[in-house]
Image 1 (cartoon, helix red, strand yellow):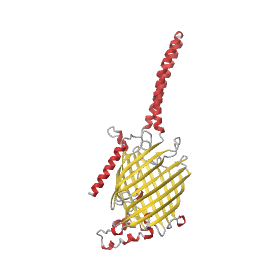
Image 2 (cartoon, rainbow, N blue to C red):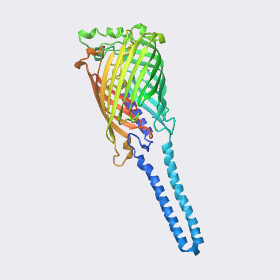
Image 3 (cartoon, rainbow, N blue to C red):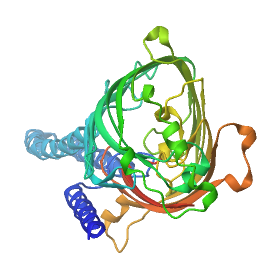
Image 4 (cartoon, rainbow, N blue to C red):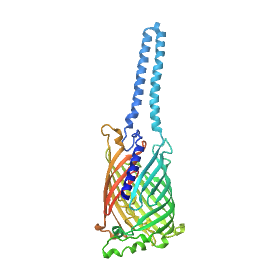
Length: 463
């Protein structure tokens, strides 16, 4: 009954989301998802040209009539004057049409509001939400991507909750990129231990983590499409463990003794910590759009150095490399490719800063944290299709479907990698466009992995 109640709750939330958002109409501005606003914008201009040409021809004919019959010049002038109101009305109507289009084109920003259900074996069933404003700081700037300011949060039936405030700003024709966030929350999750064997075993410790943190990243463009800059973060975390809830399923005798490694992976001096890190970040970005790219690539390389000299409790380092590429197959089809590499180094790396398989949607089909260790590699491919009009219904153009597949690995060192340790996953999902001006989608994905399945939802593409 508990599982049935969770499913009903998710369906109610999802139906409510679609009904709420169905009041929007398809985008009327040109974007990577292929709206036809160009043709619509040209129609008023064509009407204006036709009206002007017609009025000029009428004026010419009246002038010719005046030359041929001088004695009726005054009458012709009266006729010409009587034609002016019609000309003014036509021009006024054309001007109004242009004005309406200009208002639509000059609209600088757009609200994004999306509540949606969440269900995870790790944190339970509940609701998440995203609310924010997508905008451009300078309407005249046609180079700089849109900026975003907003909030996100969640609450689940196991008592987990979280709140995030932040955003990303693109400044001075995209010469500067600033990202910042402030977060606080209380999360109850399952810790399975470290390594692939621990993840396969399926035995976990219930852990509660209460904390807050701040992250600031500033990137400066040094050459075209290439950015570099510092990233700073500070966190205060307090964790507690319910050792009495440790349950051992029916396991072979040779691995029944292994759950002790879960306890050993969470030493008491790591339960209450302050971590402070500073490190460089490099980005190369040639995407044609940040929300729904159809061509280009983006490379992110970062290092976080947690140092006692900055106030951190321990010295350790985190390194991450992420590459994603996009190729348009047709007007409505895109192929996306992504790879992620992670490494944690140092004598005392907290369990919550290990490389988490399944995080950042690499690879869907695995709950984040079921498999974790000091090294991780993952790669995936996704096919994206935007639906056309079906039976003349334009609303269907706001929907899309995706299919994805990937594979990865976690371990203590790269030399330990073996074929039998690979973690494949795959699945499919639906997309629904949330906004008119910017191609921002709501997504829901179903993924299958070696140890089960996941249902993930969010705002924006998976990668």
